[in-house]
Image (cartoon, rainbow, N blue to C red):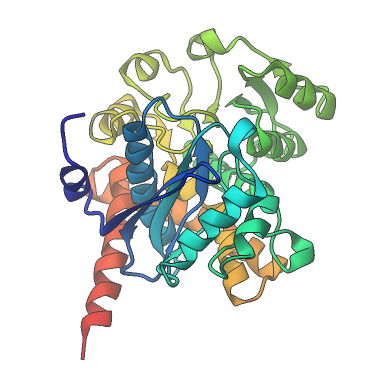
Amino acid sequence: MDQSVFEQMHLPGHEQVLFAQDPQTGLKAVIAIHSSVLGPALGGTRMWNYASDQDGITDALRLSRGMTYKNAISGLNLGGGKAVIIGDASKLKTEALMRSYGKFVNNLNGKYITAEDVNTNARDMEYIGMETRFVTGKSDFLGGSGDPSPFTAYGVYMGMKAAAKKAWGNDSLTGKKVLVQGAGNVGQYIVGYLVGDGAKVLICDINEERLKQAVNKFPGIEVVDGNTIFDLEADIYAPCALGATLNTESITKLKCPVVAGCANNQLADENVHGPMLMKKGIIYVPDFLINAGGVINISVELDGYNKERSLSMVEKIYGRTQEIFELSERENVHAQLAAMRIAEKRIADVGRLRTRI
């Protein structure tokens, strides 16, 4: 990419991008703060073996923008940020590296609050927490909320039910055929909710071990070939793995009336593929709303964790999904744009409030 970091920051409107390295531990980290209008930027730390440093920067920028919208539409008084640690977690991740990273986070004095993400976990948050108090997602025995996956899955389930209500006039998923792409932690919790609601579940994943785990937990589910999923007929397609699976080719093939899943950045190009889904009559639940259960859960830690309060907040995803559908119809815009407008309005309104003397 020929653009400078400042040019990459400009269009999405990022406030800060910060870099840190520690040769002794092997730490190479990027923290992207997209917005702090609503409050300190909250978002997870991802560790990934990127093909290049630039790929890591791009990922941090893209994900931090998504966190701004996710936190805003969820009603949280938090801005959007995201961090990446560049490197192979299986080889480089150590207590020393995570604590070195914790010092980096601490130097921001609370403008950024971190949490777990891909290839980081509650134990890593404990190490980070030894160096800073600006961390969430710690183990429950330390007063944290533990694994956020069940809460992310519960939010997805709420969004699916709201979409079902829109599509069929009833939010029951009994008898509905749901294609779940991705059998990771969140995906398996989603399958549990679906099976409990009487849905017929089809599942695929590139990881055979994860598929075996899912089938052992839920013997009635059907494993399908991930290469042919867009040729299958289903009631709901749930993308729960990589982003950008909703592209021109897949949407053209898609044979389901509803898309609702936990993956980030599901639309390859939101300005192209959001309208394409709408034109095809497919009901889409925007990703940054439906997968917000995890961040809602960890945000509760900031005021003293309470599981019941967290679940009640996650349940509100149902009503917000309905609100997005109503705005989409009223203004004749695709669901992703409707959700962004709601989030942007809240940011603008609160921003004006906070600038009053």
